[in-house]
Amino acid sequence: MESTEKQEPVIKNNCSFSGIRPIIMDLPYPDIQVRAKNPAYANLLGVDYCGSVSEMSAITQYINNENRLSCENCPLAKTLLGIAMAEMMHLQKLAELIVLLGGSVHFFAVLPNGKRQMWTPEFLSLPECASQMLKADIEAERAAIRQYQAHIKVIKDDCVNAVLTRIIKDEEYHIMLLQSLLH
Image 1 (cartoon, one colour):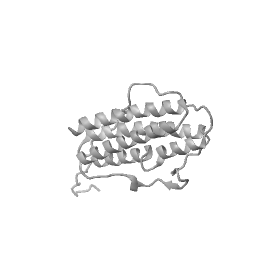
Image 2 (cartoon, rainbow, N blue to C red; image 1 turned 180 degrees about the horizontal axis):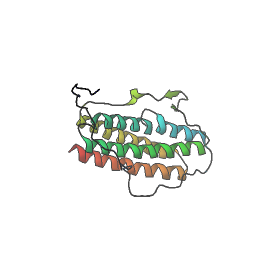
Image 3 (cartoon, rainbow, N blue to C red; image 1 turned 180 degrees about the vertical axis):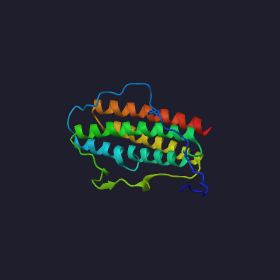
Image 4 (cartoon, one colour; image 1 turned 45 degrees about the vertical axis):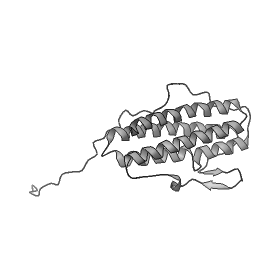
C-alpha cells in the first residue's frame, strides 16, 4: 500500500566537518619527557589540564560554540573545531607529562592550597552571538597563556617548560586567528 501523505521536508545541517585538522603552528612539539618525578609540578599541570583556565575548558567551550554555529556559520564552526582539536592535543601532552611527573590524571585540579577543584562547565563562557563567542575565546586563550607563563616561572624542569612554551605558540596563533575572524 502506497502512502499518499505528503512528506514533511527534513531539516539538515549541511556543514561537513570532513578533513578538519588541528589548527597549530607548523613547528614540532618537543619530546614528552621530564628530568625527575615531581608531584608539585604534576599538580600545576593538573590545573592546566582541568582547572578553571584549562585545556579541558577550552575544548568544551570551542566544541559548544562550534555546535551552536555549524548550521548558520559553517566556516567559523570549522575553524573552532580545528582549534578544539589543537586543544585536545595539548590536553593529551599535559596528561603524559603529569603521569611522567608521578601524578594522576583526573577531572579535578589540586590547587596550591591543597584543595581539589572538580572541573565543571560553570568555568565556561558561552555567549549567544558569534562575535561575543570569539571575544570570550580570545580572553580564554590569553588567560591560558598567562597561566602557562606563571607555571614556567615555577617549574624548574627544562623538558616540561619546553612543552609549555610550544603550547603557548599555538595559543598565540589561535588569538591571532580569532582576532582576524572578529574583524
